[in-house]
Length: 114
Length: 109
Image 1: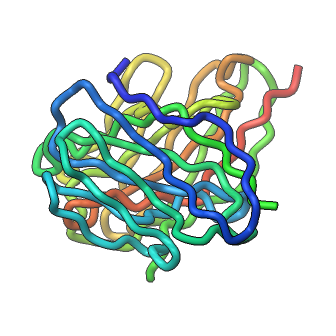
Image 2: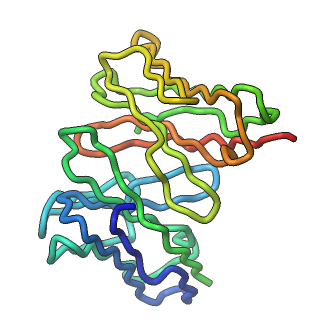
């Protein structure tokens, strides 16, 4: 299994509070991605990174920011959490999208915003 | 944006073949994928097919690609209880992978 960890694995927070989710990889892969998974919507891309300090928006980026100061860590921040951000969040990594584009996924973080 | 489409649910009797269908959108996609998600876990790549192929077989799995119709299918022969999962069709688009909503495969005894 690819070395990807996510922390925390579960979190319950109140509306309006800031939340940061961490993705950590030991594979030295260049690309990292944050997705959210919701019933009826499948996986939707929030943000992704193609290198240290290089990030770009996905299809559902509103209300989220990301940072990547090191190759191994990709942080997802909800500045002011809302109930609509209750979801399961998955991090993924990819070595080189120019090749097979295979992505390796972390175990997920279940976030509940009350 | 344009979606990758797949049916949401499939029920198959144990020992029969399962066929999961998908239509994708980007004719320039280089690779098309099938990912599997078991309960409580992340997605794992099951198989992929390069766009210049029309078929790929890997043990019990057969992937068929119809580029003209942008149609991708996954056939699982001799379906077993361990195949119960959500299966995601996906295509590459630029340096991202776009996923369908997933097909939940339910195995009947």
